[in-house]
Structure formats: C-alpha cells, structure tokens
Image 1 (cartoon, rainbow, N blue to C red):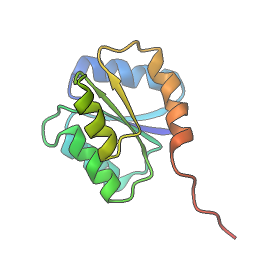
Image 2: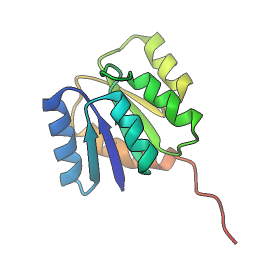
Image 3: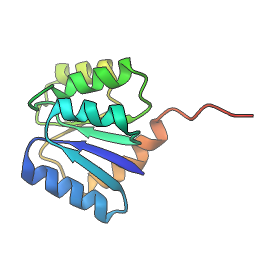
Image 4: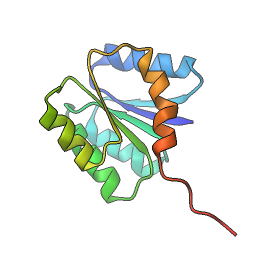
Amino acid sequence: MRILVAEDDPGLQNVIALGLTEAGYHVDAVDRGDDAIDQMKWYEYDVAIIDWRMPGAEGIDVVAWARRNGRPTALLMLTARDAPADRIRALDTGADAYLVKPLDFGELPARVPALQRLSPAPPATG
C-alpha cells in the first residue's frame, strides 16, 4: 500500500513516515501542499495524510484538487484545527476522515486500513 504524507513539521513528518514504514507501508513524504498535488499527479496513492496548514497550498486545497480530479485516494486530514466548522468543511470538501493533533501515534496505523476500506472499489472488468 502506498501512502502520501503531506506535513510541513519536519519532526512530525519523520515520526509519521517512519512509523508507517515500519508498519509495512510504502511512504512518500512532502512538506508543501503544492508538492502533494504534484505527487498525486504522478503517482496513485491508496491513502494520503494531509496537514491543513502547509506552504504552497493548504491541505483543504489538496483535498479539493484530489476530488475535482477524480483521485480515488482515501484522504485523512491531520491538523491542529479542531473547530467543528473546520471538520465539516474538510469532510464536505472530500476528506474521508479527520484527525486532530496532537495524536496518539498508535491510532494512525489503525486508521490506514480503515480508510482503505472506505475508498471506492476499482471498476469491475470482464
């Protein structure tokens, strides 16, 4: 399973990427929203973990781009923004899940397969 981590805090990005890699996932990490969009243009991700506040493009814009362009990637907003209005906006924009920082890292690897179950099934062939 391939995961994109878009997080501008280098320490948190490292912890997330290392933890998910140790859990057996292939992880690409970027620290800018526009770089996250570029990655999603070139690679197909099963899951993307996206911070809201990033340089280049905000995470909410990354989510909107992914949905507007038909990406089947399961999208998790991981952010310090904890107001109900922020959660609603992210979900309405196309995020599949919303997790508030600080997080218990044990929850993140458990959310990845749960998010994958939510993603659209590939079209049937035959």
